[in-house]
Structure formats: structure tokens, C-alpha cells
Image (cartoon, rainbow, N blue to C red; front, side):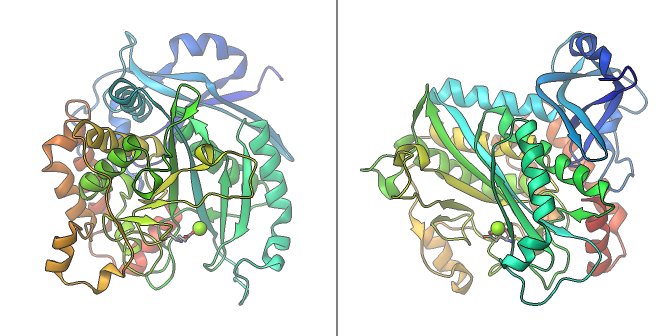
Length: 434
Ligand code: GLU
Ligand code: MG
């Protein structure tokens, strides 16, 4: 390491951005203790660089403290990618109410206290190349993998170097759309690794001057870029999600957790799919999620029980997991996961029964038929999602004092920037920022 090498201490924020400050890497030890200065109003910087109404104004001082456990140093062809995710605290060390990573830690701690388990999981990301044309007939094709083999192999090496477990890389169905998956990690690392993966991808592509976007949807007529969050539980070192005698083979704990996620989904989607265009993606027949339903291997369900392979040498109990699909990359992965975990733990506390899995096309059902099944259509716009979040006292109560109010103001600031623009223009703006 040269004396001039810099490292960025950073975190994911309410805008789903990764922001931070750089310092000479030789200071890392010192900065892990005292951090770097941070400003409360930064949390109101929207994804469009406007500053939403802020209760902090120009006041206050915080520190962003990089975490060795989320430290990434990877040599790429043309340079070095060096950063560490961290937590934002007051200068006396107390966690700051709007630090997304601290909020996630709280949620995981609640899961541990209430259910005695820890979380294992992985984010799956879809993204699209910007600019250029996308050849016809290339979905999942070998030709389109070949076109990006170099990228895939550079990424796999970078993931390994960063402590992420490479899994698959594929040409997805959409125009210029690819997908990358990784092996599971534990606890806060689940969200850290999602952030690290996105940063590595962008860094690798920046070297060749190419740009990608993780935007929820580029074209209202096209497919979306989803984030699928795979989850399972560990009690000590033992898988605790599968029960061969449980409904849908879910353990009681997993069934209650999923029931909580689905019960509160309409009120947390403002955190898991938080852009104005997220609601263009969360519509039927896009293989995303439009209702608060459980699916047994159904890719239109908000929570899908994933298949296990009978051919694998990994035990079924260890493979068994479910995936949350009402998420996209305009969110902070830390906040997304915190909301899901809190909803799930709420379901455990309430002792909710394992939900039935739906098998029909819910978009064909009338309102009363949906009600009979206990199914709710998810919010169809960001204002509606924010409204359902803000008015649910149980949900806002999971977060630190003042969080919900600041979050809603942040999102209002984001929406104000979009006023008077067409849907296409709005999509183009999100494509630029994510
Ligand atoms: N692109 C879809 C989405 O927006 C997901 C397709 C898939 O099942 O992988 O979530
Ligand atoms: Mg996919």
C-alpha cells in the first residue's frame, strides 16, 4: 500500500445511495476508533441531489466509523477499489437514529431476543447496461454470456477478494439485463455484501467506461430490475427454517416470520421498494410482486418458498430458504432488511399462523375474493406506500424516534423533484441516479 492510497468510509442512506468520505488508508486504525466527521442533514440529500426538509438544518455533528468487517480492498486492472462500510454515531458513540446499519443491527438483535435465531441470507441483483443496443433473441443465451465473460470473471475474482461467495451470473430476460447472485452471509453482512457487490460492479465497469443501472424499471413497458432477498434462520449453527411436517415444509418460526412479513408488507414496501417508479414494477405479470401473498415456488409472489435440490450434497434443511421479492435497488439494503426482519419478528411475537400459498392469478380476482383470501393489493404509488407506512403505528414504532417523519419528508423531497415530468422522463432520471 502506498502512503497516498485512500480509503472511503461509507454507508447506505435513506436515498439508497452509498455515501462517505475518503482518508489516507494509513489512518485506518485511528479512524476505526474515532471515525470521520459526518453531518445530520446529509440524510436528507435525495437521489436527485436536492435536500429534502431537514429537522437538523446546519446543526449537529456525527461520526461515520468504518468497520473492519466490511472493509474491501480489491485490485482491479486499472487501480484499487478501497472502502469500508460503517456506522454513524453521535460523537459520544451512541448510534445515530438515522444510521441504516445500526437500524438493521437493532432488528437482528430483536430477532435474536424474540426467537433465539440468527439470519442467513443473500441479495440477488438484476441490472441493465445503459446505452448501446441490445441484440434481439439474447435472453439467457450463451452468446450474451460470452459478450460479458470478461466482466463476469473480473467480478468473480473481485467478489472472492472481498469475501463474497460468487454464485451465478446470467443474461436475464430484459434488454441488456444481467443478474448476479452470491452465496449467503450472516446478519448485517447480508446487507453489507449487497452494497459491496453493487460497488464492485460499478467500479469494474467504470474501468471500461461502461455504465449500468439498477433502477427498478427503465421503461414502463419493459421488465423491471428486481432485488430478491433470500432468507433462512440458524439456531446456533443449525438450520431452523425447514420442518418436513410443517405447512409448506416451513418450521413454525419461519411460518410466523413470513406471516408477519406479509401482514405488514403494505406498510413496509415504502422502505423496500422506495422510489416513485418502484410501483411501475410492482404490477401483475412482471414476475415481481403485486399482492402480499406467499407462493410455493411462484415468481409472482411477494414471498416465494424456493426450491431445494434433491441432487445436492448439502442437506435439505440447510438449503431451504424463502425469498422476498417486493424489493428493488433504489433502497438501502440495510433499511430494506431491517424492515423485513422487524415485520417477521412481529409475526413471531403475534404467533401468526403459516399463511396459505396462493396458486391462482390474483390479478383476476375481484376485491371481495381477495378479501376472503386475506390478500391485499400492494400500494400502487409511492405516496400511497408512504401513507400506509406513516399511519401504521406498529411499523413506525420499530424504528427510532423521529425516523418515520424524516423518512417521509425525504421521500416527499424526492417526489417534488419529479413534479410535472412525464413517466418516461421520470424513468430516465431514476436510470441516471441508480
Ligand atoms: N425482473 C423481475 C423483477 O423485476 C424478476 C425476474 C426473475 O424472476 O428473476 O423482479
Ligand atoms: Mg432474475
